[in-house]
Image (cartoon, rainbow, N blue to C red):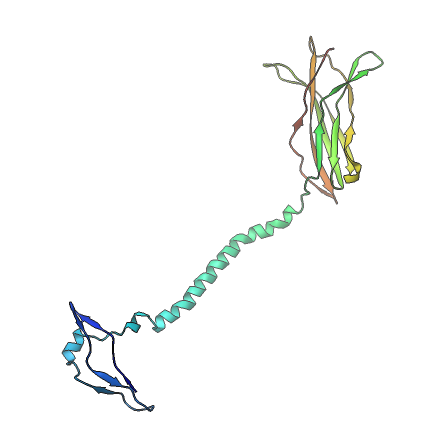
Length: 219
């Protein structure tokens, strides 16, 4: 079987095409035969025949580089996994906090009549609505609004606990208090609330404060 070398080489600015051929052996063990003029040895130094296929490296070094790249990729993946490990370990702690399933609204205080001494009464109402089974602890603070530069006057704190679910519907908590006479003219009273929810022995943190509108009422 005869295969003519068709690849080209360059010598300086001159392209050189080998003119000899190599006869491949028909049987295993035979020595290939070269036919045609063979370049002299000193010319072979400058006219080295480089087939195009040699530009695609198949050397053992390039083949060995694949396991190295795989090892580097493995180490990189291990590094990412180790970095993510603390977050995975911290996940169960999130499950220890219940999600909020209730809304608690401080309503605007309303006039509620008079007590036996003729003092005006104010009802500080709170509306609660739960969409899942929850225990609810509510903290209510009552305040009287003063103009600047005076600060608001603290009137008192009350605490409420309820066990509600979806079928309870909206529930209104009433807290009737006597109107405090703290200044000349009308009193501007309001309330603010915060709450926490619990289920199966797990409790949420307290929410931030929610503030109602003010009621202006004469003494």
